[in-house]
Length: 398
Image 1 (cartoon, helix red, strand yellow):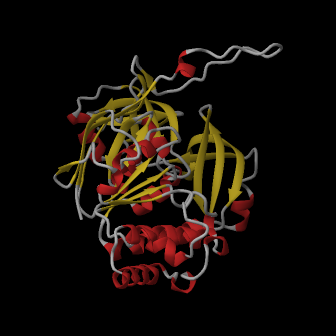
Image 2 (cartoon, rainbow, N blue to C red; image 1 turned 180 degrees about the vertical axis):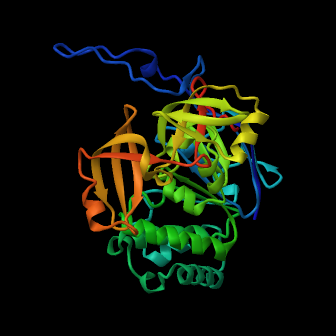
């Protein structure tokens, strides 16, 4: 097993001749529009990953998460050796591996599309890499059967991939990685091809697997639910930059900036234009004629940062907003019955706002009253407010 050290890792894709020259429009066609990208473009090329630095501990489960094109898969592929590192240093254990071939890095990777050999049985798919290493037949058989037992695929060892479901194929792909006893396990969106129910099942399987094989995991996903449930720590990326690194609870409770606040949590955090005020030495926020005094913890954080009263972006999560007899006025646009709760989409202060309203203590008449166009009021506590600078988007408590 091993710890990893990524020190100012950068990936730059050089300009090709095609990207340098704009394409000419064919006769009768509109001129080609230049694609807008948020990645930095330099004289050397397009910067896909910007100075990624992180220390990953032995047996830690790290999740890289972010929208498409943020650089998470590129980072994973640089760790695997499938992409060349443009700048920076990568250590696995105490060994610098920038120029070490993928096969010599002692890592195993599970891909999004399974990448199984269709003409081989499940047993042969799992045993293939061990045969290349010229490991004895007895040891190969032992490792394959142990991995199959862990993943509950022993009964499929004689089948070929085409006879398996998507979830079973993904287990085979994971099993093929397990048998190698790698120092580091890399997973690139392994569940994205599965339906919602299977994804939930496989997520639970990966959590169980992690406790049984005790190795370092680096997992890439664009699904923040996977990130929150699987990771010891989460790395949130955008446009090649790390936005925040922290435990699931840290990034949920203390998002570093507006991007993290909006990305982590489902439904996503509501954002309001509000005013931060100070009365009798206490901070409060004003929204829609309502003043909410902040909690003691937030008072101390803002005071420590010498924050002055000003216009702010106020973030409140949907589950932290409650219907009230008095508060901020809103108009119901859409209500979605989710069983134990209602997702209430309302318009308030010129913004679209989502509230998660529990139905546990509501009467049928109260639920029926939340129809489209209904006038309601909502409130929230000072302990659930997140305040962001209007210019920089950074959390004022950071």
